[in-house]
Length: 157
Image (cartoon, rainbow, N blue to C red; front, side):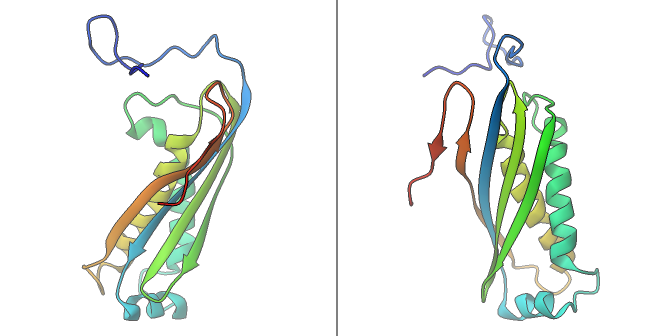
């Protein structure tokens, strides 16, 4: 396995994907934001002063998936055919899972990871007035399909 984002001079470049086949591609990512029980309860009760935390975080995550190429230097600007965020509310954390889809020449792993990251950062931003000790953790790719490298499914950690 060799790195593909370096040219002959050893400098970074964007990989040429023009000759690759268009395939259906899907990626799922995961992340979690830990917080105080009281903060989780405020979110559930809709008492965070900035508004509906999970609705805003969902929109933020979807927007993040669509703008990934503007944030990650060597990431291709791709047409996203679908992007979704799901939340699982625990006693002291909120789990975030994203799913991003495209039909194209390159995958959507970075878009799925960015979606989770932006959703978590949005939750932090909306709740920081009541809980500055929140921790964003375990951002990871869960699975991907499509393309030359085929399918990847994360085995349990």
